[in-house]
Image (cartoon, rainbow, N blue to C red; front, side):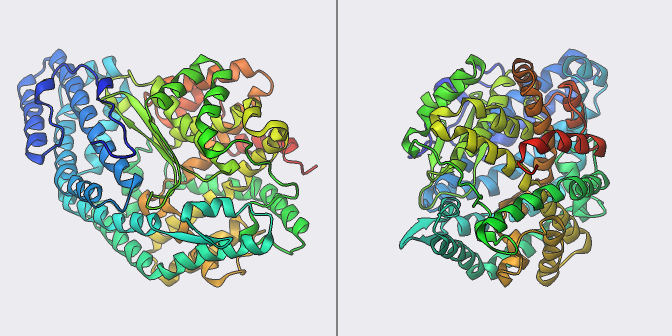
Length: 575
């Protein structure tokens, strides 16, 4: 699929070994996908105890699922790029209803054959133990009994994407896509800034009934899926789905507690300084981005951001510069915000072509630069591990993925003069501070989600749970400034709907990123090498092993968190 925003990258396709190029369709049909899986399943049934045959099955499946992955990525990206395009929307719906269920069911059948094969030792020796752990986890977390529910869930979540894709705010007398709320939050005119913030709140409040309905429907479907698999709650199923092998909900609670004890006091002190500078008792949510000293803005426009970023990454060395130039040359970065474009930013991949793709919503603020760098951290990891086989090992679990993105945000700072000119030093200081103040919010979102699913809360209960979490983790914010916002800030957070429990991952990765960045201040070359090594490992190890491999402290260890905060404090301007 190609669209006005999505390039043709077929020239980068790998030379398949088991798929005949002449037989590869441009538009997938469920029957064709099932037939190819049936061929793999037949090979499994004929493999017996032949270890080489099983290894070939793993590689053959990887090649096929790379092809499917590229098709799925193109369909999903195209929809996020233009949520108002009827043809693109229809194709995305068709994929979710006709293709994705076939892949979900058939891939688990193949995974079960591989897990139960007599060649486990040989598979471990060839690919490492992480592969079979992931396959066994997939078998436990997915079952055909939930396929129809998964399709229904996708349809429900499309309504959420459309609401925010068509959203607008009013700012300085003009209508802008919702993504521009990030830029309006930097407006130095208090009245204009607060009016724009209120415009965003008004939009979400106007759609609150529908959003609550979407959440309730998604909640019920997710709870039923957990019940069908014999899981105590959706929390347990979700941890399985996210392959959190080496930590659980109890570990998450301990990390939230450590964040409350060691980070919240520092973050609150920073936010109180903001409030004091503005002459308010507490920090109004519309003022979160307003610092006592104004954060420098980029000296380049949106249309110059990519060429400037290319020079910045090149100055860090070819290992950073060459992959970014490739992304730019191949039009694999969709940068600007526009009407109808889905909100947020992400990095995905086209595994059959072995290239990443970056989706942003640049509006001309300093946040654009951090977001682009963040997503490039994901892309760089994907690029450096693109040759790992099988495909399942090319990317780590989500909390590990965020190390690459969040660390690059910090490692790039000394090289960003082309973006900020004489304002770089001030921008760098403010960005480091901002990396701290957002972590308590991450903990609040995680606390909220655990309570919602564990206590099965309705809309009223969710509002109360959010108020409790917000007051606990962000006490310096004025949560009483707007009644609706105070109980429903979570409605604004895409992850709560689209990727439940994918948020503490950012906090864990941020703790690791601080340590790696602080190390870079003492030995930059060693820190960059450690970072690139971590990227190259892909998903060959679980989260905590990857962190140890990089020579970094375990973020689940409260002593590590406390030590990291002690090292970070001198960079926060609190002393």
